[in-house]
Length: 71
Image (cartoon, rainbow, N blue to C red; front, side, top):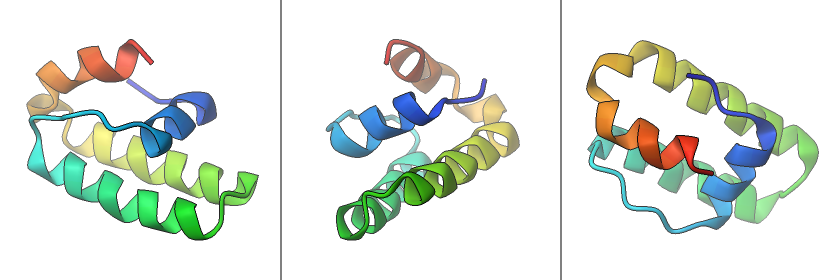
């Protein structure tokens, strides 16, 4: 699963609860970065980081994919 820029912005602006701690920590860091600079370049960088995480840890992200897919 790959997220789009629009989904990334919804993740960065929202307050979703994820079961995977590593993903939650990643989002916390990216939300801070986005709050300081909400430019399209920042969103693209965050999208790339989220997609890299999802590819690497897809086996343990099962329940959280449903939340992400609904965005």
